[in-house]
Length: 93
Image (tube, rainbow, N blue to C red; front, side):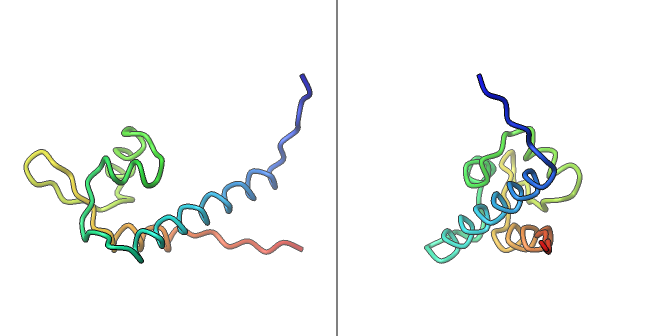
């Protein structure tokens, strides 16, 4: 089985591609008939993250949320702001 060496540059490139893909998904959803608030399950599917990751994003204050009864809702506009605020720009020579 051949081995591949992954460099820091490879990881950075992957990160940028992943963020671009997430932003494209968010933009596609926003251009459609997107609801103002989405539930945890919808957000996990959209971002392809686990329940634990979503909980960590809530606990550390990365994603603002509203809890009504036992249901947690996320404001679509706030999710977009978080994505934009955490965008990483790199210059490659």
